[in-house]
Image (cartoon, rainbow, N blue to C red; front, side, top):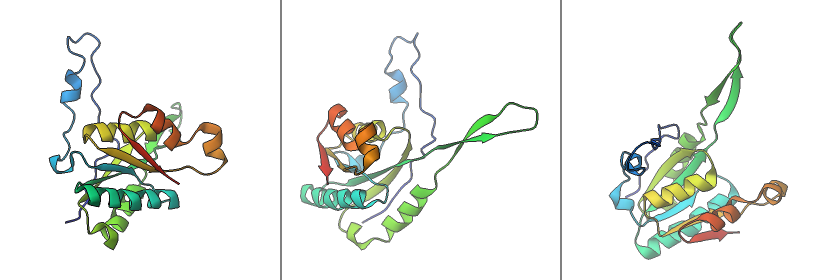
Length: 174
């Protein structure tokens, strides 16, 4: 059975209190994940050719291991300046509705019928969010597509940064 759910990217995240006796107490208030997808395969997906290859590999990996697939889209939050008369300019986050479009495309995809899956939307740094979702779901692996082009060479690719910092196996698909 295939399906999808959206986890809002702009949800409020608890901040640890510096004076609290237990700094991890704030983590316990975090929304729990679906237990059916524990020890699944996390895959970063943005609709690009590279992420489509990563998704295809992750589907095969999830099928072979008999686990669920956690598809993660890290949404862009575009800062926009709003000018209100005499007030100083204010920066507002404009939501990225690409996740909804991707969710509809994935819901209609026949190749996802063989594996249970969910779509999780996050906002922020791609590497951090993929690792965070992997930790929340206790994922067996994180699958990402490689970055091609000059931007990845200058600033470092997501796959390279994730492979250096992740606490679980990272599979990079060319």
